[in-house]
Image (cartoon, rainbow, N blue to C red; front, side, top):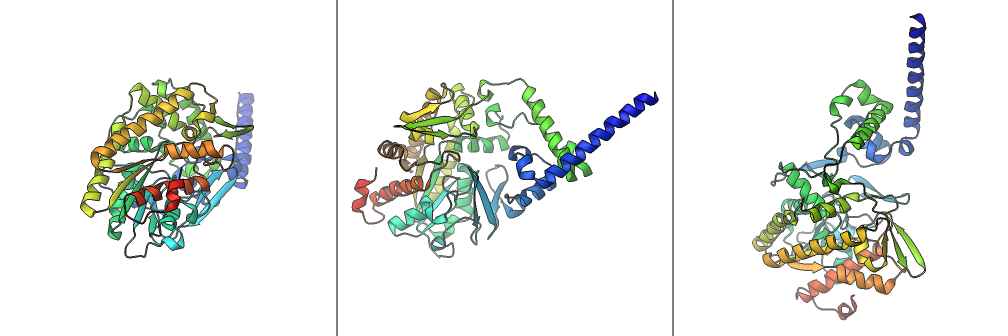
Length: 421
């Protein structure tokens, strides 16, 4: 009996020593040892402290916009908050938000009584490219000689776009509002709203099979020990991985691909991120989700345009693999048919609905594809790791939209429009 007690005590002592060493390591080098996908599931107060230590964005920098559509919490940045974005390859951009809490160049100040062009969208509109002046809304204003303002915010979708426009934008009496939809994840974000309203949540959305760790971590150790939280979260992920898949849409995803442009090869998505794009393509093909989730925000956008007298433009931003389709080689060969189908299905539905609602439809895909063919491996339109538009991609978006707005007769035409691809 005494031998068993001694062995038990030795095991406890060993585990305690290991735990202390792990705790020290996690406090010395949290950025290197705690993956962000695990950190997001830590106990909230502990997670926020680590995030501040690492210079990440936290909930304390935000406020909650009251919405009228039953969607999930919509967090916006507080005025003058300093916000950081990790765009991959060890590059992090930091921005000081303006007096409203959005990222804009000084020349695009919110304080103006009237603003000609408003942009609403997600990370394909927001400041993720190093400079507010380089975003397509700011470049569009310079091309047209009009005042612009950028409401872009990473991580939101079309329902949130109209909420932000309703809350802020209408007071500026815009002449044009551009809703910039992104092929890769706006369907996902629209489905999040439906799920918040109580609709069934397909496994394809990701996270549906995750354990609620709140009861497990809501105690002094959970609120103070990084080692305990990491162990709990890691264990939960391992157990979740053992659960049987309920849908083919939720199967493992390899979304890495290469662009083979002449003699040059560019590895895209090397970290295999944005897997939701593939899962939603599968789910749509299986009939598990519907593109009709786009209809409500488009209808609200059209109603606002009629009531407030602005020109509503729906601009479609394609994914990198769509733009470079002739040059793409997917790690998973099955995606070579699935992803083009997903792109075509979304564009077909959105064009049809935009036309029926009197919205100006701008599919940027053909112009981007033409530019990709012309430029080949020179001056890529997308960042290989972040998968977002490069500065050149933003510039092309601005040129496309400038041509459209001039074509509507809102500003004088430019000879350069004829050269826009």
